[in-house]
Image 1 (cartoon, rainbow, N blue to C red):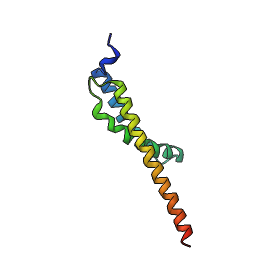
Image 2: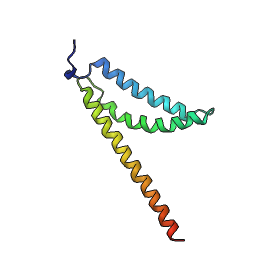
Image 3: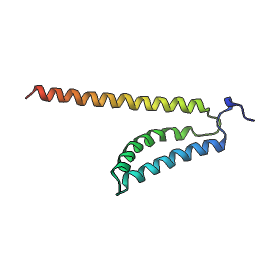
Image 4: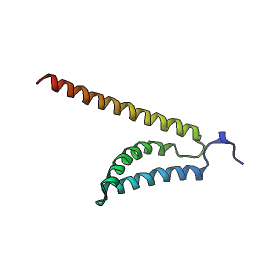
Length: 102
């Protein structure tokens, strides 16, 4: 039996890699389908999540610890949240600026 500290096996690494790629493809299908606005909205969010998750693909190799993948994933999504907060905040401040310049 494998010890948890040994990291991913080759097969597990391939499964993680293919899951990320499959999720990215599915999100693009949702984005470009012409039938449902709900699926389009889900696709918009999923494309961003899939794009950020794609940064983990180079780490999907034999021997990488699962905890390391999770840690790097959390760092990537923390950066996304910080950038989103900065973007929303700057848009809000720009709105205040436009209101005051009238």
